Picture 1 (cartoon, rainbow, N blue to C red):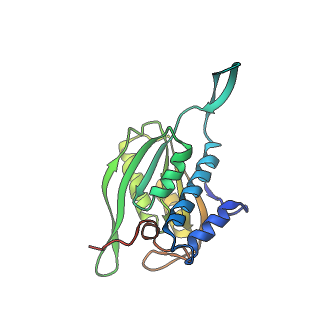
Picture 2: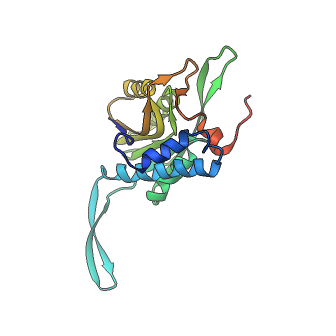
Picture 3: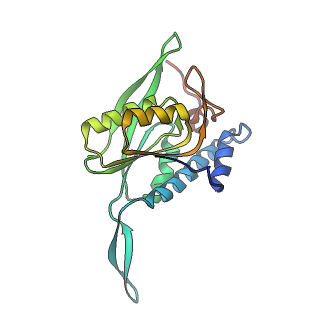
Length: 217
């Protein structure tokens, strides 16, 4: 299942347009905050699919039977670009456990690349719901490798993927490789992917725009 949050007009459209806009991208704080705000909205919308339970709450004047989330999800992010998006969801799922994965494109001189995954820090994911945040779903290679490693270690109940911009190629690759137990929630979907695996029109390099350019080894 793929949910495009720009398919219905809302403030999400404003935030995604600013994330794309080269005139707004000069403001790193604004760029990070727009990713964060999108993460907050995605968390709110995804929470509607969770199981709830009724608990008795003591108020100053009596008691109230309130419906609350039955179990908090695990929030996972792919470093470093995913951190603002992750933080937005953590603002709403403020009691969630967290997971951090280091996965990046290791480029070769011929222009090709492979996904290097060097670090995973997370709690047990057995029978848990996990939400993975990554601003750009381009080729889908990083995400597929991340999910494969997590599923190899644990019996995960449900996986949600949250990204600001997704490509149709990346979506199809994730769906093909990862099965039906995954929902992709995105701010918008672009059709074109370059030969080097970049989304067009996209928004550029989310990690560099959020945190500054990095030296390439």
